[in-house]
Length: 128
Length: 128
Image (tube, rainbow over all chains, first blue to last red; front, side):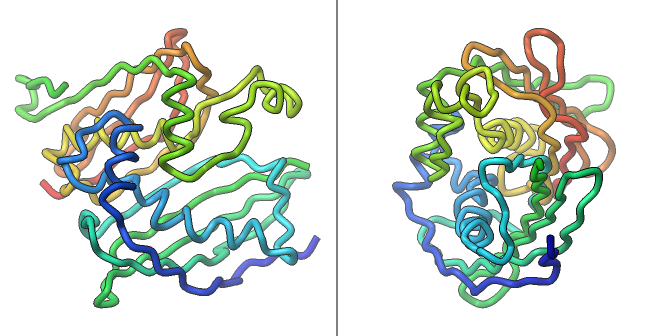
């Protein structure tokens, strides 16, 4: 297996829509009036970049054997309804140990001014 | 709900959630993560699971909500880390708890009805 550490994916733009945010807030049991829930980054960040990784034939991440092992988000500020953000995914590391593959996948999200909004760091473990 | 901590003069927060298939399905819709391991019992069993399981990101979303409450609002949260350590299935009751761990820091736990941690190494930073 050839690792794909360092690989980057094209930027994806996504608008933070009021209806989607409200639906997400209700699903995790919070009041939509409190604004964009922090882990809505699962949608505007990881949600738009992870499909690029999974769809990358050369990265060859077997989705059926994939475990989401760890997740970290860092936020510069709370995202706002109505803004458009841009997320860029990259494979930070890709290593195999004891028959398991460990892929660290990072996504940087910036706002309309190009200022950092959120960084997502995900550890995926792919079982053999 | 946030509870005053008279010893440390800061807030801790706790939320107890009994997961249901309906909530998991609602999160799948809201997040766009339609992996059948969260929606289809037969499929989940075919890949060795006991049945449908909750999204790790749903657990993290609730954990973030509790952390935000202890931090004084979602806009103050700056970092959240979790390790997905245990499966959560419909009917499981998980107690999510955030406790002060020094200036701008929270220790987080998520423990099911059998006393097993479903999230480990969980921690958050916030803007005091």
